[in-house]
Image (cartoon, rainbow, N blue to C red):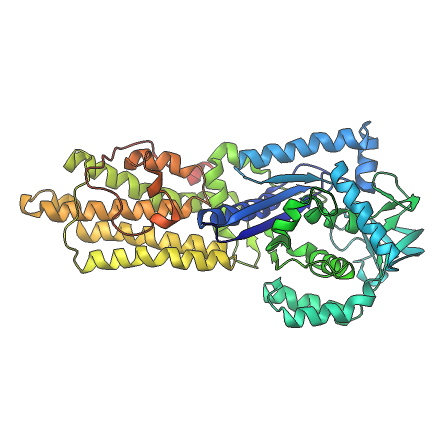
Length: 514
């Protein structure tokens, strides 16, 4: 029986160029959460997509001799290819160039206008085309864009504005009553401070480019990025259409997962637009940290990006996914290097997890012809291992519900490490030399294989390809009832199950050759 619905989204990515490993982190993290929620009994809807309009796309396409649509089509195909390679199992991929999205944006804009929350004025500001963002004089750094360091241009044009300032007090009251809405706490404090300094009305239309959705009541204007992009979270669900069953079922979203650099748009602008139309607000917006290089933030605009497809070809999708999810602590930045990736694969996946299966399966084949025997009454060491195995799913579920993905992976790793230590403590290779210790040998090997089953079930959202490699070696590929979250009760693998040695799950990487 379903525990209820769970709707999670990533930001929609801008197709100015190929995605980098920072984008991969966000989407893999959302995918792991979605998979975990499905595993634990929720009816999940997972949305990602692409934000395809704007001046930057229009200019770049022209430089390349293409129409904007031709240009974005090719890059968005690359997005989808990357998500397929990373085994990202989304329910829908929304594109802002789709008619279903355009209709919702026009409806949304019209509704705000009709109730007096959108008005016409003129705008003057410093504009960074690569970042699609206006900055005030004091926000510039040495006269350049504070985000990407490039040149900005002073623009003045007629625009429509959204009366965001009108809702500042209502927003502050909402945050006070819903302190968990913005996570982590440091981000919430930043946003509250920003609003208390005074909220300006928001420019929501442009006239200096054509590539976008026309303002329904004034076609000279194009809807600017915030109303266009942010409404994807409900346009994908059919909001405002005759076919709005998904909207009725899944909205409000449980989690918007975003990078910390776009928190202001998702925690201030988006909620206030929804408030203005008296629509339900998402339950939580989580801003994760950045995956940094030694030289600082990774950015398509800066051109200092790491291509995840190259890493997938080299190390495999599961290993890359695991590294990303394990490396970035909740809410904090992490540092990427290929050496750190290789060490994480060697230590966690090759030495601990992969080696636990390999050595246990080898001993079972060598000492018991691969046949698992019924375990006998447990000793103190056994009870310690079993208790940790039974406690770990609860710990992992608690961390995942708090979106502390790295901590969840670490908890699973502790169970695997304890099982490896248990093998050293019980020394089955010594037990096998003494026939009087046959029952003890059976118990030790059974316990480790059962821990391997627990760990593999819990790691499935992190590394979705792993089960198909592990279950055949454990002899339970035809027993789906042993692969479920509900099956994480001790002693479920039946005696007589035949274990066999198989391929090495994660070959060790020679760090000297990096």
